Each structure stands twice: as C-alpha cells, then as structure tokens.
Length: 124
Image 1 (cartoon, rainbow, N blue to C red):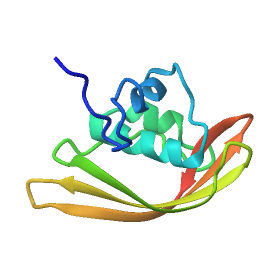
Image 2: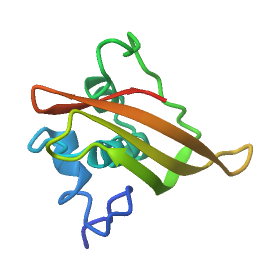
Image 3: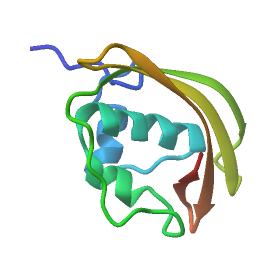
Image 4: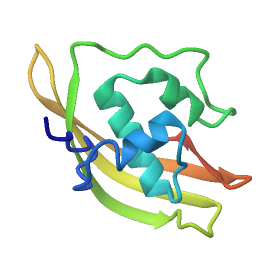
C-alpha cells in the first residue's frame, strides 16, 4: 500500500507532512504550515489537534466537526508575516468541501501568533 498524500496538498505524504504535527513529533515552523496542518486536521477529523493549536484567548471549550463535510482541497491565496523568526502572521486561504447538500468552499483571512516558539491560530 502506498502512503497517502497529505490533505494540505503540499505534495508530501501525510506522514511526512501534517501527520508529524498531528502526532506531536514536530511543530509548525511558520503560520502557513500551521494553517495547512489545521486544514488537514479538519480533513482527517482531528478536533483535539485543532483545539491544541487554537490560541487560549479565542479557543472554544469544545469543538465538534461536521461528519458530513469532507474537506478535500486547500488553496493558500496570500501570506503576510508568519515566518520562522516572526511572532505574528496572516494567511488568506480558500478551503473546499463536499457535503450531502452540495459542494462549497470557505474563504478566510486567519490571524496567527507565535508564543514561546509555538504558532497558534487566533481568529479569522
């Protein structure tokens, strides 16, 4: 069996890309990498990872994913800041899904912050 492609469409396998972040064996080095890993967490159904990477100031107490929504494509449209030596970043993206009610997409401009070397999603 061949390794599966990462849902974030980086071109790497899931295990070599976002899977390492989800497993806790690596951390995001940039805001865009965190955004990609969060998209992949939606795609593979990992709400624990989403909560752990959500900044404490805006994190909900719990998160339930819509089991009928299948995320299949992520387009990064723009980034501002968010590099390995910065403390804030913005990632604009469009994420595409399939659902019983039809296909759709979500366009968002997300803010990220890095604290003590760890990137967190703040809000959109």
